[in-house]
Structure formats: structure tokens, C-alpha cells
Image (cartoon, rainbow, N blue to C red; front, side, top):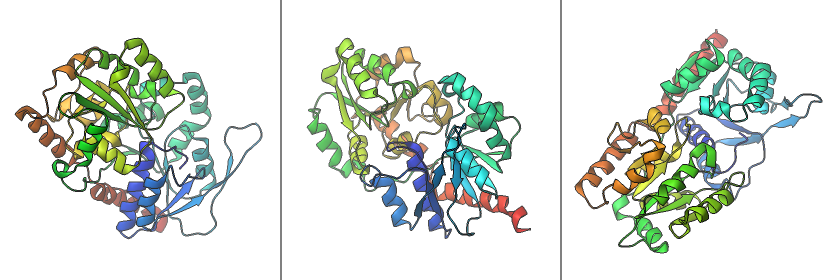
Length: 372
């Protein structure tokens, strides 16, 4: 794992590893870079409580190649390797060094919109390395049937299976938790204005945060709280856009927070917003739904989660994002309570225990030829 703090991939890998360990499996997370214990406190805590160890891989640069050489940890106890994310040279290195079966999880990285980002570089890298990695894999797991088709379009007829991310049920009752009221009080929201919350890294293009600020300009009864770490200057770009749109007084940045801070933000929210241009299966959205927070999402997110289809929120096109927010009923109305109940019901379909059981069955099936 070489992902940064705030990445949903880190959250998913930590939760899946812990769930598999709780089913009696010995799991080790191979790290591509050292993790800062302060910034990575939440995923490291999940791993440590479950007894999951972490080992730092040794990667050696190779002259004339973007792909390093990987020195795998000594010992012969590993049965299977699971690689996460896409266009990661270290994943190629691990697959070359590892002689057994491996699984790849792209986490939405082959969405056509994502592939257009740095298109020429990805085209060259794909021809030289990425497609070969997928074709040698024992299995590629997709988060949704939509992503499964994207994988097949990108790599050809490779073995695939659909296994979603999971979500842990929220601790306690959202209605009885004072953390949400404390957060609203901090931003001066008690009694009148409504709060939309986004959780994730401030990746403006990927997450559609530019569209979200445009929507805020046409939704005057809302304030917006962005929760998550900066990403490639995203915060500065958003601050400048907010000045141009004159929405600065209604825009708040919480920065990177721990799991308790995310929970407080979700419990204080009137709506969760995620206008991404592409997604795999967003962890933050599942967490919001589990807390009973209705969501306003983009059509790209709706396609993989079905928030509006489940009655748990709305999925407007970008031009209608602001008017849709402004038309959302206030949280004390009966229609709002229906949305909250639908959100919890939708989240209940995702559970880490059942996801881990599905992965367990997949791993065992892949290991049968080796055992024979």
C-alpha cells in the first residue's frame, strides 16, 4: 500500500484486512512507503486492533525503467497477494517478484473519465505494463458491475468477479449523539442554515468540487463543509473559486480529521454531497448513508450506488446540482425522515463481514490449483 492519508483505498484495505483476520486468517499489509503514524492513525488502529501486521517492501530503482525491482519479505508463509489501485509501478514490481497467484482490485481506476486524465502517459504505460499485469492476474475484482465492464473493455477477456466495499455500522444512535450539534454550533448553524458535507481528499477534478462550489452559489440557504486533506493544491484552487463566486462566508474547510471528526461531520450534516466525475464505490458515501444522511450525488456516483433509486437522496446532472440542493426539504419534515431511513437501509446492504466472507471464498477457490 502506497496510498496517502484520506484515500478511500487505505480505508477499504484496512477494513478488509481486519475482517479477514477476524475470520481466522493471517494477513500482512505490504507498505510501499512508510506511514506517518499521526496521519494514518485510523487505518493503523484498525489493523493493530485486528492483529494485522505491516511490512515495508524494499524497492530498488532500475536504470531506464519506471518499474522498480521489489524485494519481498523473507519467509514462505504467503499463499496469495492482493494488489490494490492502478498504474502503480510498485504493483508491477511485486507481481514480477511474486511467483504465486495474485488478485488485482482497480478501485475505479479504469473509468473512462479517469483514463483521460494524463491520457498519453497512461496509454504508454498501459501498453508496456498495466495490461500485462491484469492478464497475468488470477482474478481482477470489481466493486460494481459497471466497473467490471470497464475492466473488460480495458484489458480484454480477463477473469473478473464483483465484490463491493463494505461499511461498518455507526456506533450509537445518531439522534442521541451530541457531536453533530457541537459541529453545527461551531460553524454557527444552529437554528437556521443547512449544512452540506463532503468527505474525502480535495481532488477538484476527480471529486467534482468545482461543480460543488458552483452549486453553492445557486443554493443560498446552504453552507458547505469540506472534510479532508489537501490534494495537489486543491484547497487553494477552491478558495480562489469561492472568492470569484462570492460564497466564501458559506464555505468551510475542516482539513484532515480522524474518524471521530468524520463521524461528527456526518452526524451534523443535513446532506452528504459527492458530485464526482467518476467513482468506484466511495467509502465516504457508504459511511454517510450508514449514519442516515441523505446524499446528493452525481450521475456517475448514482450509476454505481443507486442512491436516488433507493430513495436515499438525489442524483441531479451538474447544471441542476444547486437548484436540487435548494429544493431539498428541511430535516424536520416527514419526507426528510423517509430519506434518512432509506439511506440506512441502502447502507445495510454493505457489510464488511459478508464482504470478507466473499473474498475468503474467492481466495480459497484460487488456491485450489496450487494445493492440488
